[in-house]
Length: 208
DNA sequence: TCATTAACACGGG
DNA sequence: CCCGTGTTAATGA
Image (cartoon, rainbow, N blue to C red):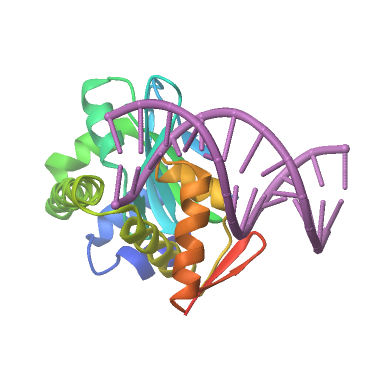
């Protein structure tokens, strides 16, 4: 676990901090499509992402979901950070998009590290900033982009996350993540296929 | 005009 | 058969 840590965070964290993380952190392998955190849950440890991707979703009163943004390696969850400090409930849902490796750090440590390690403070601050920017990006998408562009953007993100041109998602899943109906997704995907931007297959889509 | 809802047909696993 | 997909018709914002 320590080698992985040094590999990913060595340039960022002090040696002592890396050792502390290795000492108290719990390494976890999580398969794809696992719910890591749900609405209303109290958070008792924060995840440090080593490998894979997690999607962060918001949910409305009817239980319909909307994808906000993805977390990738080197990222952490901003909601966890604020939840841990104030002991409030989670406002978001986190689901693994791919098979994921992460380190869970109990909350009591992360607070003391804030005073102890400059690099940790910087990391937490940067994380807040990054997540805020991604949130703004998500708002821009919903407010200003048409559905066709949002679909392409989502496919591009998913492709980048998996490192593959193939996106293994059904039209239904895409519709739920973008909070729209499957009919529209099918129609838009068909249009994109006619424009030679993607190729459609059963249960997966290839970007061209 | 464009999204949504409901309904139906087709085909693959 | 069930599910994913493609399409249409009616309705609404």
